[in-house]
Picture (tube, rainbow, N blue to C red):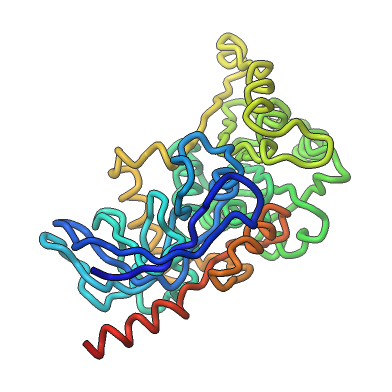
Length: 356
Protein backbone atom coordinates (compact mmCIF):
# COMPACT_ATOMS: atom_id res chain seq x y z
CA UNK A 1 0.00 0.00 0.00
CA UNK A 2 1.34 3.42 -1.00
CA UNK A 3 1.26 6.17 1.58
CA UNK A 4 -0.02 9.55 0.43
CA UNK A 5 -0.04 12.97 2.06
CA UNK A 6 -3.20 15.01 1.66
CA UNK A 7 -4.42 18.47 2.59
CA UNK A 8 -7.81 17.70 4.10
CA UNK A 9 -10.65 20.19 4.51
CA UNK A 10 -11.53 19.50 8.15
CA UNK A 11 -14.61 21.73 8.32
CA UNK A 12 -16.25 24.61 6.50
CA UNK A 13 -14.61 27.95 7.10
CA UNK A 14 -11.68 30.17 6.25
CA UNK A 15 -8.27 29.28 4.81
CA UNK A 16 -7.13 27.93 8.19
CA UNK A 17 -9.32 24.80 8.03
CA UNK A 18 -6.85 22.65 6.07
CA UNK A 19 -4.84 19.94 7.81
CA UNK A 20 -2.09 17.71 6.43
CA UNK A 21 -2.68 13.98 6.99
CA UNK A 22 -1.17 10.72 5.82
CA UNK A 23 -3.25 7.83 4.55
CA UNK A 24 -2.92 4.74 2.36
CA UNK A 25 -3.95 4.01 -1.22
CA UNK A 26 -5.36 0.58 -2.01
CA UNK A 27 -4.16 -1.53 -4.92
CA UNK A 28 -5.12 -0.29 -8.37
CA UNK A 29 -8.18 -1.70 -10.04
CA UNK A 30 -8.57 -2.40 -13.73
CA UNK A 31 -8.53 0.77 -15.80
CA UNK A 32 -6.97 2.98 -13.13
CA UNK A 33 -3.75 5.02 -13.09
CA UNK A 34 -1.77 6.00 -10.00
CA UNK A 35 -0.30 9.50 -10.38
CA UNK A 36 2.53 10.92 -8.31
CA UNK A 37 1.34 14.53 -8.14
CA UNK A 38 3.66 17.37 -9.06
CA UNK A 39 1.06 20.14 -9.34
CA UNK A 40 -2.62 20.54 -8.44
CA UNK A 41 -4.83 23.35 -9.72
CA UNK A 42 -6.96 25.66 -7.57
CA UNK A 43 -10.42 26.65 -8.83
CA UNK A 44 -13.33 28.75 -7.58
CA UNK A 45 -15.26 25.55 -6.89
CA UNK A 46 -12.60 24.61 -4.33
CA UNK A 47 -13.07 27.92 -2.55
CA UNK A 48 -16.85 27.59 -2.59
CA UNK A 49 -16.62 24.02 -1.24
CA UNK A 50 -14.34 25.20 1.57
CA UNK A 51 -16.94 27.83 2.49
CA UNK A 52 -19.83 25.33 2.36
CA UNK A 53 -21.31 26.97 -0.75
CA UNK A 54 -20.81 24.17 -3.29
CA UNK A 55 -23.78 21.75 -3.19
CA UNK A 56 -21.99 19.07 -5.25
CA UNK A 57 -19.15 18.66 -2.74
CA UNK A 58 -19.32 15.92 -0.10
CA UNK A 59 -19.28 17.19 3.47
CA UNK A 60 -15.97 17.49 5.38
CA UNK A 61 -13.62 15.83 5.99
CA UNK A 62 -12.86 16.19 2.30
CA UNK A 63 -9.88 16.44 -0.04
CA UNK A 64 -10.48 19.18 -2.61
CA UNK A 65 -8.94 19.43 -6.07
CA UNK A 66 -10.25 18.77 -9.59
CA UNK A 67 -7.01 18.57 -11.58
CA UNK A 68 -3.41 17.43 -11.30
CA UNK A 69 -0.28 16.84 -13.32
CA UNK A 70 2.57 14.52 -12.46
CA UNK A 71 4.10 11.16 -13.28
CA UNK A 72 2.32 7.83 -13.71
CA UNK A 73 3.56 5.73 -10.78
CA UNK A 74 1.48 2.66 -11.65
CA UNK A 75 -1.13 1.43 -14.11
CA UNK A 76 -3.90 -1.08 -13.59
CA UNK A 77 -4.82 -3.89 -15.91
CA UNK A 78 -6.50 -2.94 -19.20
CA UNK A 79 -4.82 0.49 -19.28
CA UNK A 80 -3.48 1.29 -22.72
CA UNK A 81 -1.51 4.32 -23.88
CA UNK A 82 -0.14 5.19 -20.42
CA UNK A 83 3.00 3.58 -19.01
CA UNK A 84 4.72 3.92 -15.66
CA UNK A 85 7.04 6.92 -15.79
CA UNK A 86 4.95 8.91 -18.29
CA UNK A 87 4.24 12.57 -17.60
CA UNK A 88 0.46 12.92 -17.35
CA UNK A 89 -2.37 15.29 -16.53
CA UNK A 90 -5.75 14.30 -15.15
CA UNK A 91 -9.17 15.42 -14.05
CA UNK A 92 -9.93 14.33 -10.50
CA UNK A 93 -13.41 14.33 -9.01
CA UNK A 94 -12.11 15.83 -5.76
CA UNK A 95 -8.93 14.40 -4.19
CA UNK A 96 -6.41 16.50 -6.13
CA UNK A 97 -4.74 18.09 -3.09
CA UNK A 98 -2.73 14.89 -2.58
CA UNK A 99 0.78 13.64 -3.19
CA UNK A 100 -0.70 10.62 -5.02
CA UNK A 101 -4.07 10.20 -6.72
CA UNK A 102 -5.82 7.30 -8.43
CA UNK A 103 -7.76 8.28 -11.55
CA UNK A 104 -9.72 6.33 -14.19
CA UNK A 105 -7.72 6.10 -17.42
CA UNK A 106 -10.38 7.98 -19.40
CA UNK A 107 -9.58 11.16 -17.44
CA UNK A 108 -5.79 10.86 -17.91
CA UNK A 109 -3.71 12.15 -20.83
CA UNK A 110 0.00 11.98 -21.59
CA UNK A 111 1.69 15.36 -21.54
CA UNK A 112 3.57 16.24 -24.74
CA UNK A 113 7.33 16.48 -24.27
CA UNK A 114 7.43 20.22 -24.97
CA UNK A 115 4.68 21.05 -22.43
CA UNK A 116 5.69 21.68 -18.79
CA UNK A 117 3.88 19.94 -15.96
CA UNK A 118 2.93 23.39 -14.62
CA UNK A 119 1.15 24.21 -17.88
CA UNK A 120 -0.38 20.73 -17.97
CA UNK A 121 -1.97 21.20 -14.54
CA UNK A 122 -3.63 24.39 -15.78
CA UNK A 123 -5.35 22.70 -18.74
CA UNK A 124 -8.07 20.36 -17.44
CA UNK A 125 -10.67 22.45 -15.59
CA UNK A 126 -10.19 25.94 -17.02
CA UNK A 127 -9.58 24.98 -20.62
CA UNK A 128 -12.19 22.22 -20.86
CA UNK A 129 -14.78 24.60 -19.40
CA UNK A 130 -13.72 27.33 -21.84
CA UNK A 131 -13.72 24.89 -24.77
CA UNK A 132 -17.25 23.66 -24.05
CA UNK A 133 -18.59 27.19 -23.64
CA UNK A 134 -17.01 28.60 -26.77
CA UNK A 135 -17.16 25.74 -29.24
CA UNK A 136 -19.93 23.39 -28.11
CA UNK A 137 -22.58 25.65 -26.58
CA UNK A 138 -21.39 28.98 -27.96
CA UNK A 139 -20.84 27.77 -31.56
CA UNK A 140 -18.11 30.40 -31.86
CA UNK A 141 -17.06 31.33 -35.39
CA UNK A 142 -14.22 33.46 -36.68
CA UNK A 143 -15.15 37.13 -36.64
CA UNK A 144 -17.65 36.79 -33.78
CA UNK A 145 -17.56 39.32 -30.95
CA UNK A 146 -17.10 38.01 -27.42
CA UNK A 147 -17.28 39.55 -23.95
CA UNK A 148 -15.28 37.71 -21.27
CA UNK A 149 -15.99 38.74 -17.70
CA UNK A 150 -13.12 38.53 -15.21
CA UNK A 151 -10.66 38.25 -18.07
CA UNK A 152 -7.70 37.93 -15.69
CA UNK A 153 -8.92 34.74 -14.02
CA UNK A 154 -7.86 31.21 -14.93
CA UNK A 155 -10.97 30.54 -17.02
CA UNK A 156 -10.99 34.13 -18.29
CA UNK A 157 -7.49 33.83 -19.75
CA UNK A 158 -8.38 30.42 -21.19
CA UNK A 159 -11.48 31.89 -22.86
CA UNK A 160 -9.50 34.76 -24.33
CA UNK A 161 -6.77 32.46 -25.63
CA UNK A 162 -9.16 30.02 -27.30
CA UNK A 163 -11.43 32.74 -28.69
CA UNK A 164 -8.46 34.54 -30.22
CA UNK A 165 -7.25 31.25 -31.72
CA UNK A 166 -10.63 31.06 -33.47
CA UNK A 167 -10.30 34.60 -34.80
CA UNK A 168 -12.92 36.24 -32.56
CA UNK A 169 -12.85 39.89 -31.53
CA UNK A 170 -12.65 39.82 -27.73
CA UNK A 171 -13.61 42.37 -25.08
CA UNK A 172 -13.09 41.78 -21.37
CA UNK A 173 -13.81 43.15 -17.92
CA UNK A 174 -11.31 43.23 -15.06
CA UNK A 175 -9.82 45.45 -12.40
CA UNK A 176 -7.69 48.29 -13.77
CA UNK A 177 -4.36 46.75 -12.72
CA UNK A 178 -4.88 43.76 -15.05
CA UNK A 179 -5.73 45.70 -18.23
CA UNK A 180 -2.35 45.76 -19.93
CA UNK A 181 -1.70 42.06 -19.38
CA UNK A 182 -5.14 41.21 -20.79
CA UNK A 183 -4.49 43.38 -23.83
CA UNK A 184 -1.25 41.44 -24.37
CA UNK A 185 -3.47 38.39 -25.00
CA UNK A 186 -5.06 40.17 -27.96
CA UNK A 187 -8.08 41.79 -26.31
CA UNK A 188 -9.22 44.98 -28.07
CA UNK A 189 -10.94 46.75 -25.18
CA UNK A 190 -10.82 46.07 -21.43
CA UNK A 191 -13.48 47.55 -19.16
CA UNK A 192 -12.76 48.41 -15.52
CA UNK A 193 -15.59 46.71 -13.67
CA UNK A 194 -14.91 48.81 -10.56
CA UNK A 195 -15.20 52.18 -12.31
CA UNK A 196 -17.15 51.65 -15.55
CA UNK A 197 -20.56 50.30 -16.47
CA UNK A 198 -19.87 47.39 -18.80
CA UNK A 199 -23.34 47.53 -20.39
CA UNK A 200 -22.99 51.11 -21.58
CA UNK A 201 -19.34 50.58 -22.54
CA UNK A 202 -20.05 47.51 -24.68
CA UNK A 203 -22.95 49.20 -26.42
CA UNK A 204 -20.74 52.23 -27.08
CA UNK A 205 -17.86 50.14 -28.41
CA UNK A 206 -20.11 48.09 -30.70
CA UNK A 207 -22.19 51.04 -31.92
CA UNK A 208 -25.29 49.75 -30.14
CA UNK A 209 -25.15 46.27 -31.72
CA UNK A 210 -23.93 44.26 -28.75
CA UNK A 211 -21.85 41.08 -28.84
CA UNK A 212 -22.39 37.56 -30.14
CA UNK A 213 -21.31 35.75 -27.00
CA UNK A 214 -20.98 36.64 -23.30
CA UNK A 215 -19.17 34.34 -20.86
CA UNK A 216 -20.18 35.19 -17.31
CA UNK A 217 -19.32 33.69 -13.92
CA UNK A 218 -20.24 36.82 -11.99
CA UNK A 219 -23.38 35.33 -10.55
CA UNK A 220 -27.07 35.97 -10.46
CA UNK A 221 -26.70 39.69 -9.75
CA UNK A 222 -24.83 40.15 -13.04
CA UNK A 223 -26.45 37.71 -15.49
CA UNK A 224 -29.43 39.92 -16.29
CA UNK A 225 -27.13 42.83 -17.16
CA UNK A 226 -24.95 40.64 -19.38
CA UNK A 227 -28.09 39.60 -21.22
CA UNK A 228 -28.64 43.26 -22.15
CA UNK A 229 -25.51 43.39 -24.35
CA UNK A 230 -26.42 40.46 -26.62
CA UNK A 231 -26.65 41.10 -30.34
CA UNK A 232 -29.35 39.31 -32.40
CA UNK A 233 -28.60 35.54 -32.27
CA UNK A 234 -26.32 36.28 -29.31
CA UNK A 235 -25.81 33.84 -26.43
CA UNK A 236 -25.17 34.29 -22.73
CA UNK A 237 -23.25 31.38 -21.17
CA UNK A 238 -23.27 31.25 -17.36
CA UNK A 239 -20.67 29.12 -15.60
CA UNK A 240 -20.29 30.34 -12.03
CA UNK A 241 -21.75 32.31 -9.13
CA UNK A 242 -18.80 34.30 -7.84
CA UNK A 243 -21.05 36.78 -6.07
CA UNK A 244 -22.08 33.98 -3.68
CA UNK A 245 -18.57 34.02 -2.18
CA UNK A 246 -19.30 37.36 -0.59
CA UNK A 247 -17.74 40.79 -0.46
CA UNK A 248 -18.49 44.26 0.88
CA UNK A 249 -22.16 45.09 0.62
CA UNK A 250 -23.10 41.72 -0.90
CA UNK A 251 -25.64 39.15 0.16
CA UNK A 252 -23.57 35.99 0.13
CA UNK A 253 -24.07 32.28 0.56
CA UNK A 254 -26.75 29.84 -0.46
CA UNK A 255 -29.55 32.14 0.74
CA UNK A 256 -28.24 34.93 -1.45
CA UNK A 257 -28.09 32.63 -4.48
CA UNK A 258 -31.64 31.45 -3.91
CA UNK A 259 -32.95 35.01 -3.46
CA UNK A 260 -31.32 36.39 -6.59
CA UNK A 261 -32.28 33.30 -8.56
CA UNK A 262 -35.92 33.78 -7.66
CA UNK A 263 -35.81 37.31 -9.07
CA UNK A 264 -33.95 36.36 -12.26
CA UNK A 265 -36.34 35.42 -15.05
CA UNK A 266 -35.63 34.79 -18.73
CA UNK A 267 -39.01 34.70 -20.45
CA UNK A 268 -39.45 32.25 -23.36
CA UNK A 269 -41.35 34.68 -25.60
CA UNK A 270 -38.76 37.39 -25.02
CA UNK A 271 -35.95 34.97 -25.90
CA UNK A 272 -37.69 34.03 -29.12
CA UNK A 273 -38.53 37.60 -30.09
CA UNK A 274 -34.99 38.81 -29.40
CA UNK A 275 -33.32 35.75 -30.99
CA UNK A 276 -31.24 35.21 -27.86
CA UNK A 277 -29.97 32.14 -26.05
CA UNK A 278 -29.23 31.63 -22.35
CA UNK A 279 -27.04 28.63 -21.51
CA UNK A 280 -25.23 27.16 -18.53
CA UNK A 281 -22.15 25.01 -17.94
CA UNK A 282 -21.16 22.94 -14.92
CA UNK A 283 -18.19 20.70 -15.68
CA UNK A 284 -18.77 18.70 -12.50
CA UNK A 285 -22.10 17.49 -13.90
CA UNK A 286 -20.47 15.93 -16.96
CA UNK A 287 -18.56 13.16 -15.17
CA UNK A 288 -21.11 10.60 -16.37
CA UNK A 289 -20.84 11.85 -19.96
CA UNK A 290 -17.12 11.31 -20.63
CA UNK A 291 -17.45 11.63 -24.39
CA UNK A 292 -17.89 15.40 -24.01
CA UNK A 293 -14.83 15.73 -21.78
CA UNK A 294 -12.70 13.27 -23.76
CA UNK A 295 -12.94 15.09 -27.06
CA UNK A 296 -12.23 18.46 -25.45
CA UNK A 297 -9.16 17.43 -23.45
CA UNK A 298 -7.69 15.46 -26.34
CA UNK A 299 -7.88 18.46 -28.67
CA UNK A 300 -6.55 20.83 -26.02
CA UNK A 301 -3.54 18.61 -25.32
CA UNK A 302 -2.84 18.45 -29.05
CA UNK A 303 -2.98 22.25 -29.33
CA UNK A 304 -0.66 22.62 -26.34
CA UNK A 305 1.77 20.15 -27.89
CA UNK A 306 1.66 22.05 -31.18
CA UNK A 307 2.48 25.29 -29.37
CA UNK A 308 -0.88 26.89 -30.18
CA UNK A 309 -1.73 27.53 -26.54
CA UNK A 310 0.31 28.01 -23.40
CA UNK A 311 -1.73 28.46 -20.21
CA UNK A 312 -1.03 31.49 -18.06
CA UNK A 313 0.48 30.44 -14.73
CA UNK A 314 0.34 33.17 -12.09
CA UNK A 315 1.86 31.62 -8.96
CA UNK A 316 2.86 28.25 -7.57
CA UNK A 317 2.42 27.73 -3.82
CA UNK A 318 4.00 24.90 -1.83
CA UNK A 319 1.17 22.54 -0.90
CA UNK A 320 1.29 23.41 2.82
CA UNK A 321 0.42 27.01 1.89
CA UNK A 322 -2.94 25.96 0.45
CA UNK A 323 -4.80 28.40 2.72
CA UNK A 324 -2.69 31.30 1.49
CA UNK A 325 -3.28 30.18 -2.10
CA UNK A 326 -7.05 30.15 -1.50
CA UNK A 327 -6.92 33.70 -0.11
CA UNK A 328 -4.92 34.82 -3.14
CA UNK A 329 -7.45 33.44 -5.63
CA UNK A 330 -10.47 34.55 -3.60
CA UNK A 331 -9.06 38.08 -3.55
CA UNK A 332 -8.83 38.11 -7.39
CA UNK A 333 -5.10 38.79 -7.25
CA UNK A 334 -4.21 36.18 -9.87
CA UNK A 335 -3.65 36.51 -13.59
CA UNK A 336 -4.26 33.01 -14.87
CA UNK A 337 -3.84 29.79 -12.92
CA UNK A 338 -2.66 29.25 -9.35
CA UNK A 339 -1.12 25.86 -8.53
CA UNK A 340 -0.10 23.83 -5.50
CA UNK A 341 3.35 22.19 -5.64
CA UNK A 342 3.64 18.66 -4.23
CA UNK A 343 7.10 17.87 -5.58
CA UNK A 344 8.79 18.05 -2.19
CA UNK A 345 6.73 14.98 -1.26
CA UNK A 346 6.51 13.10 -4.52
CA UNK A 347 10.16 13.35 -5.55
CA UNK A 348 11.14 11.91 -2.18
CA UNK A 349 8.58 9.12 -2.64
CA UNK A 350 9.99 8.35 -6.07
CA UNK A 351 13.50 8.04 -4.62
CA UNK A 352 12.30 5.68 -1.89
CA UNK A 353 10.41 3.56 -4.42
CA UNK A 354 13.51 3.32 -6.62
CA UNK A 355 15.51 1.91 -3.70
CA UNK A 356 13.01 -0.84 -2.93
